[in-house]
Length: 519
Image 1 (spheres, rainbow, N blue to C red):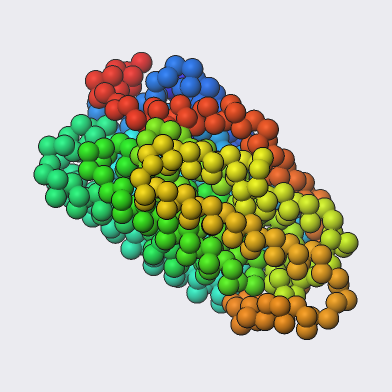
Image 2: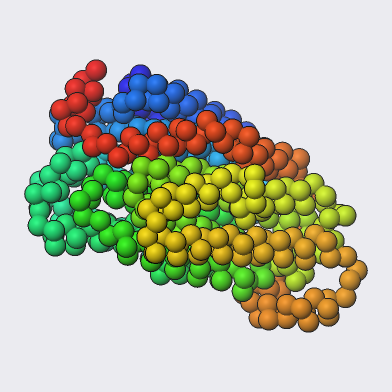
């Protein structure tokens, strides 16, 4: 079974190479990309079932080098679950982009560049999830950084190049901090293997641990868009092509959250900064959603809600109980799927209406009722209405916080409820204006009610109206179906997430890990 682990990375890299060679053959590239991500999804599902049944993580020492000298790939419940979800999301967004490319040619997603870059991005995400040491986690981040810069600047428009430069500069700062932390940790402890670090970290004085801890948390918080290090995200994501924005919003920040989970549960068990994380979580939730309320453009609204909902994950992480970690993992899965789906739905709105400004889009309920439904279901899910998965995830987080019961925890629960209600308000306001407003209605009344949005960024931006290919609608419908499945099968999924949280609370023994790599 462990032989399957390296395939999670090697298959996407091989697929990227084939797609690059077949640069002039669109159909071959599409087939290679779909087959590649489908294979990864199947392998990850098999590994998840095996890891969950055995209750033991799988570890592979690449090249049969002994730990800690070789590259160790490490798959537990958390890693395998996130790869299953990520590969499904990547596949759905790929199908969406195929439809867009077939309709528009190479204007938005130049296929000869898009497919290799997309598969390399996938390889970087999977590498980060299964890295058994900090340096290869860094390598995974750098792979996605290179690929994401290519994807975010597709089309080479002025706005995309400008935001791409901001994105790359911020990412490089995060990478420098991460690499500095790796160097300091290796100098202090002589290893970067996460299992060894968890055993040796207690040998360091508390102040040294705190310095290393903060350095890693800051580096990962930039990638996860945790306030106040989230300033770059709302301006970077909305300018990219619709499929790129969707996959960035759904996955890239979660890689940063994943790294924070590993840091807090595995590396620094005895040196917690949970009080600081709770305060940061509350600020991230509130500031993010207040930013969303001040926006008039759908993609910017969703970008700010993305920031605010990262706060829920930091909240669960800071509670630091197995129950809370399990709830955080469930909420991550929920948010990856729902946030991606909303961005795909907004991509359909943009093509149908020629704009994503809620001041300009009108009458879509009559003109495009299917799109209205595809937006509404994930919107109420993200807002946390029962019985959807958003409500289940938030309730689980609040329940874990209530068990701790400190005044700060209760404050976070109040802040989380307020953020959820404001999220619902922001998304339903956009729903009301964009879908229910009559197409011929005078905008004077609208401006009187929400005139303060007239000066919001991109409030008056219009684009060309375009035909929506059936495959784009089908891909979005598939994602909406998955968001509903998160609710229908919430019980089994939450049980897996809870077991993943419990597994993270138990230290991994290095001797057992070494024996596992030899099997």
